[in-house]
Image 1 (tube, rainbow, N blue to C red):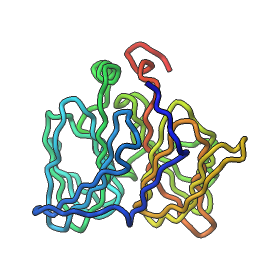
Image 2: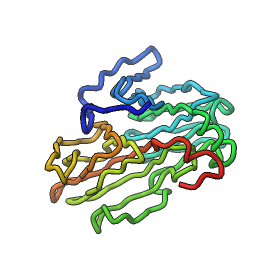
Image 3: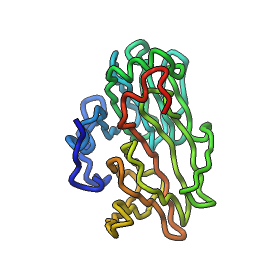
Image 4: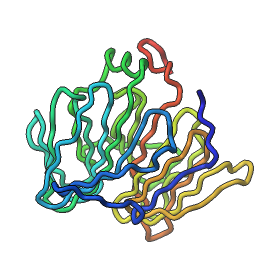
Length: 258
């Protein structure tokens, strides 16, 4: 059943995310609950200095973690990964436990993605080797015509690496992304660094665009189809992780070309 959205975008500001630390110094709060019913739930997490957490493991769900702020380390079957910059992690379902330790207060987004029959079939046919950890600087840069000439973009998860999700980053000063709406994918954005930019979403041909300011720690959701510009003024930074989910599930079954 197709979801009919009544808004062009949804935003939660960083300062509006409540922190509820448990006895282990860990806080986890759902972002924009109830907005998207397509099988993804995202949580803003905080971990106090010197504390650690062993996240829940899932046999039938994909987890994608965006480490946005604060240094620490992640320990898994491959050893100890130093988190010294923006970083990304996809655990090996429920097969390998992992632990996150904070050297300073850490902020990260914990995304849980349900795997339906098409996702499971695609995963069984082909997926990247898990667990998967990457620092931002280790990820491949790409060029896209909707981004400014001095905008840096990096690919984190490519199409079909892990079912229907894609992840990348965009970073620039005084420019950014000016993109025509893509009806095939929904998009979330997690603002990083010293972000201070404008996000405009809507339908340009109809003269219907709404603009909101975005800063580090903010989170937004843009339903499939709407045009979207994420651009900073001169001297200001635009820096965000974009996270997309394909709407057409059947295209992802093995042997089906997009």
